[in-house]
Length: 285
Image (tube, rainbow, N blue to C red; front, side):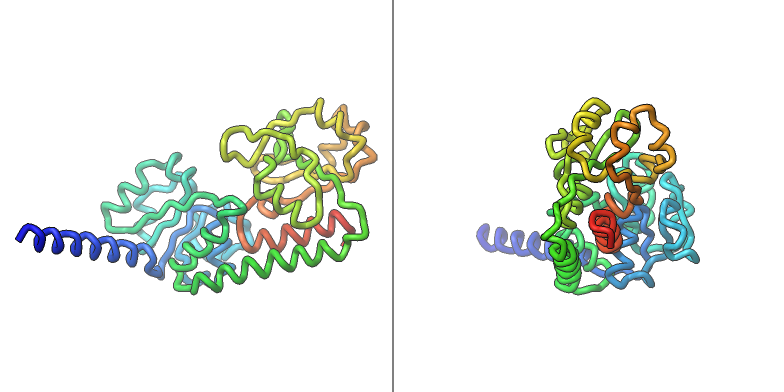
């Protein structure tokens, strides 16, 4: 009798587990995305029609007719849109800690998807694709194709010297990109060499790393490109860079600006656009 009860209990637990997995993998028709990276990838995977609202931090050209919500949006504003899924990342959860609790009490599914690393991106896309009813294998195929196309474009210039590239991630204290960050991996895929490969991340998992003026000037003679990442973290433009007191030390180095979301945002669209822009900067086409 005890054995039979144990069997029934185990079967019940397995059934509940399967139901939970199925619910997590179910597709949703009204999604509020509070992180631009999630939005970019949903659009790239063909799920734009499932978006009910997006973050106010999106580019102006991204689905301009949709409502835009701030990072610290109230639960009432979200519930008014009648979503069946709210997608956030850990930063949103930390800065708006009560949002998930209130929404989930109201029966609205909230899923936290953290910003994926280069190596985690395939798994991230497969998870995201299930939420919008796309075959995960198709998502993986899109990623593989895009990376191959960029590698092939870079390979066309294999007879030329690979440029040594130093990224200015933030002008304050001259932070650069961490060696294993999305930006560093994209630069490598497109044929560049990260001049700050020895930099240590600001903290474990951080995409930026301290570099400093002294090391920047010390490496100036070996640099081919000084790449300024322009965006919320760094508003510097070439005109501002050229006015810095130490700029004469790198005046013979090619200075270029690239949008932050092109270089550092893990998304299929940024991979394509950022990759094309890097190859143009590196090789002039």
